[in-house]
Amino acid sequence: MTAIIERTPRSITVRMSTRRWNKILELENTYKLARIINRSMKQVESEPSMTPEEAMDVLKAL
Image (cartoon, rainbow, N blue to C red; front, side, top):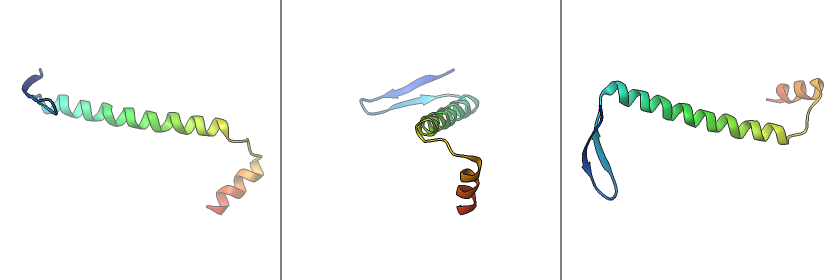
């Protein structure tokens, strides 16, 4: 159960259980990770493909 305690034009104060708050934080972190993965997938698709030898050379350079 969530109850709005105070509402101003700039912020909202709510009361909720710690279990629900932890779930919201977990969902927010999952969303951020999904955005990072999505951006990286787009970047990978735009890069030219490498041969296995080229890939090994890049990994060895790291």
